Image 1 (cartoon, rainbow, N blue to C red):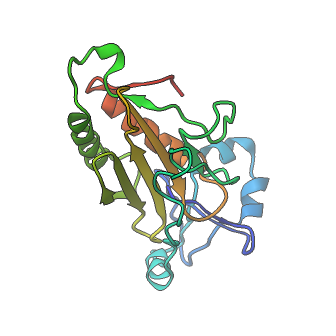
Image 2 (image 1 turned 120 degrees about the vertical axis):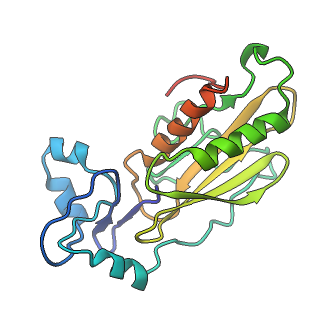
Amino acid sequence: MASMALRSSSYLYTTHEQRSIVSSLPVIVSCQQHQNNNNNSTDQMGRREIILRSSGVALVGAIFNFSGKKPDYLGVQKNNPSLALCPATKNCISTAEDASDLTHYAPPWNYNPDGRRGNKSREDAMEELLQVIQSTKADKSKPRIVEKKDDYVRVEYEFPILGLVDDVEFWFPPGKKPIVEYRSASRLGNFDFDANRKRIKALRLELEKKGWASENSF
């Protein structure tokens, strides 16, 4: 999910499985209020959660567009080919990160672990991946495949209320090893409360039903 915790305005926009609706005017929870909550309520609070007193949030989404601009550095990097590293913010994961970076690192996927799936081709694996992307509903966002090549896919996950966007990339590196690298990041804000990691995990679990595996679990 695309994060929207803006330090300059001190507002936290969240939207998650849980949504609180109370009476009258819309209220947007501030970062400071969020930080001062009890640990239990903080753990339960989804990111970009909008506490509503009416359906006025729809009007907010119509007036403002929080989709953000697509980063210029997306795609396979030319020097030392890999997907891009993450910024310092806590709303991105990437297989290109060092495994010691517990905030940003996520392990690659293997679409034919130990050769158990016979002669599973890259083309077949790509079709399986596209199918899972389109069918898996990990959160309230809607996936849209905006770029596809033989070895690369970029998907925009957009949330319907405020138009927030996450960029998710998948890359099949050259070589014989049946590996898929990926990167998932929010365009805006500093935190995502593990939403990108949860989405990637949901996709992986569906792919595991087809015979895929993670290089190591997370």
